[in-house]
Length: 615
Image (cartoon, rainbow, N blue to C red; front, side, top):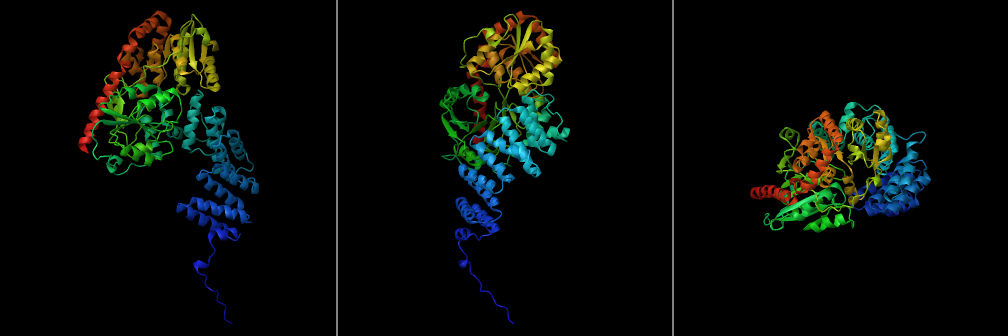
């Protein structure tokens, strides 16, 4: 008996994908394959339509999987409401479907429903039986991230500890765990968590956190190099500025200086730089700003924009396109004002869109970025012994590396009672961010206050946990809690005015004050600092040298304490420093902004003309 032979169906006989999906007969595997092919071909909208038709007509027991995939696709298309609806559909079918719970949380976060996102993720964290480890970690880590953004630090830290107990080898989690403990003045920063080893703590610490923990330049370089190796794309074989010729071919005419940053507003960098932009010699230089700063009507933001000859928005522009825009503009010198700090975009710099690329202000130390060859410095912040630990070469300014703004608005001086300060006390202060505080330096401050009768320490408290931890540290050293007075956050004019109420500023170490030190000296308040071995631990020493008070920069903890105690016990000595600053501070090289800008321009001109000649 002969077997029947089935007729061969040609490809043209197969139903069209949409018709097949509507038939309810398309297998899930075929749906996934066809949708993936459409996405690869750049037809994501068609893929979403295919999913929609299949879901509307299918009776598959795996319908929730298709709804989930549909949601992720809609989210990538920016259709948040539709994506949320798709995830909720998946959860109606399979209420405990963890991937949909996780992604729905992200959609809720994007539309501002923080409580909703946290509730969903907390459900995943606490589910019984627990979901697979990778899904638990996703829920724990994103909950901790969101809680940190909400400044709910103890809750965030608790979830990070749970995450590290599940899996120790998570460098991103270790990084946040350490920095969140710094923000809370929770010492030691590397309190054991799970099975995290000392080496993992070392390797997981971010560069910013490392700058506040160690004065070892080799460790700072290590942190920078690790970040670059893990997060920054490899540079192209041919620098982008050579691939893309500027309009007209060769770079000619005025030197084009481009400033690259996402912090050109009410941020430390945005507060220091307006006069730098304003004072550039327009007969020789053209000033461009390339930034992804959120737009606003803040006076500081508007002033900065007015000071730029050209402003190019990079928000929403990918790094490759952003680098091409810089190269096409014919920028001679690109100044990176952000380094590896939060929100930085090193992927732009690594492509070398400009022939000369310089690091300045945003990162007071080496970035190890292969696209950055120079760093603005002076011989105090960057002495010869530091050079082996910096991938950048120094551009040495004659006096001080830092520009600052001389047009700062200052509120009227308030009475001490306005901030709860005793009228007759000697007031030490430190208005640095709490993450710069270390157990070592806080211990020194307590010994200083203890040794100076009728003195108080006036501090900024970023959060309630930091305040309580500082008070507990005072308790442990026998310093009455009433001798610590906490200043609230204030608008810049009020913040500047209150410097006049203090007698002496105590600097942090190894993360020195930068903008805060400039503010204090501008307002006539002397500073005692400790200078170390890194750029960041020598910033205040540089400012003090330029303002004419180098004797207030010490080189050891013992010398720091002795000097602060001596000044505290002799209030007239503090008054003499204040008189000096009132009479000579603002006319010193530190605040001679026209000269500093000329010095910067001289260096930029030399480097730019050399690059033009070599092109």
